[in-house]
Image (cartoon, rainbow, N blue to C red; front, side, top):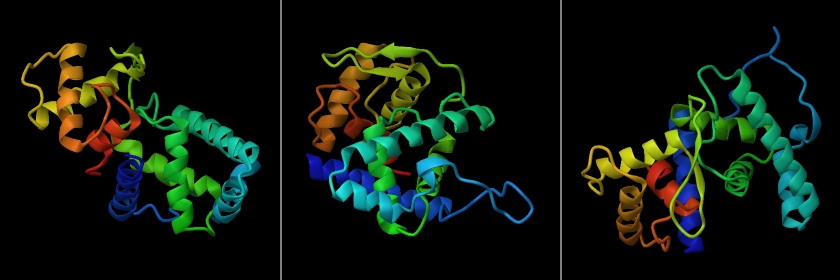
Length: 202
């Protein structure tokens, strides 16, 4: 299951780079295209990878904290945006970033995060969407807008017929989707499930 999960992430990452042209695409802050990068985000991807491979968990945690701060700032200044990240948890985001960094070790950590966020732009949460507790043992919370996206994808794949499905309907449909994909999720919107459903084709 772990290998399948990693495979989904790798496929999503590679296709996103290919289709969206994310290789070091910077929006200039001044006339000569330069701007100051504050904090650990100025570190190279190779530095991040070295620390991660050395098991420096505290340092990796600092990279994750910087990433979350950058996402918050991006949410504020990105037009028509409440949250650029529809469902991914920080650990999942760092897996995406790690794949980018392995491909482009000389790039700054900032631009790895920037590339991932750009790939999310079309499916960002645009409205101040409330968090909904999804039925199930894990009681996972998702944006209402993201749940609507999940339902739409399940409808398009033929797992839902009701035009106004309940959460229980969506859960039953997720069970069918998970069985088809070989995912053990019991109808819960796990990270592996949502990547397969919402990101795999990107």
